[in-house]
Amino acid sequence: MSRPDLNLLVTLDVLLAEGSVARGARRLKLSPSAMSRALARLREATG
Image 1 (tube, helix red, strand yellow):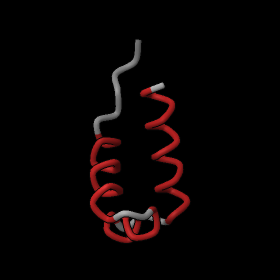
Image 2: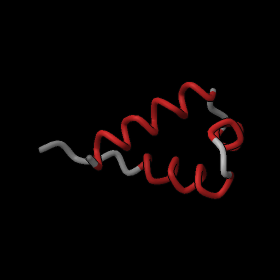
Image 3: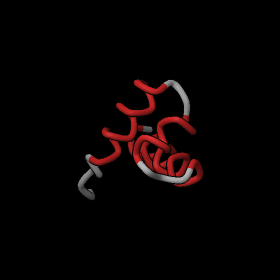
Image 4: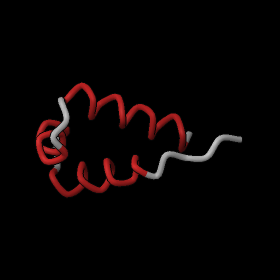
């Protein structure tokens, strides 16, 4: 079993705080597509 990427929790926290992928991406200095990919990895990790 691989170790979970705990950085994805930061992504989730920022998304919930900002209320949108675009604003969350801006806050993390990511592109919206990078933020979406991170969320997809989080969904995959949590089932």
